[in-house]
Length: 216
Image: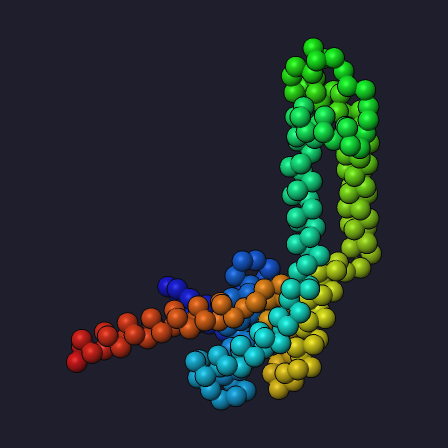
């Protein structure tokens, strides 16, 4: 049974590289390594330097490319959690009301539970939360309609741009193999995975060498 992508046959490797999923990047990396072995006439280990060079070129602007998605994730995560105390936690609601809303504060007897606090804060929290929710819903429908019309999301355009750049930088290798590798690792520095593969292969070779010595 194969225990590593390097032990997969070529046809199966091609299919894995074309299918989206958790194993796609591993399959594209191994396929790229075999392309380097074929073109440069080197062994599996000898392809490592060229593979690292491709990864370095592909991840040159990685921090800038990931920044919009990281900022979006951070804003969504923070906005989701901060909405809870703003609606239901009286000290935070009082503080926010004093600084930004200035609405009359109900009697203490009307703010004894979280639901009572929420009924008060909802007077000013409903417009922004409702508007933001409706805006995101509209953008989601707009994105779906745009996709149906053939438009490509920004992430897909970024992957394709990287593929074209990597193909131009390394024209000696098969364009399809280079493009698949570039797109599969578009938002990740692949050097750690390349070194991980080397460590695994070294362990396999050491085990085989030890078994051969025992037989002798």
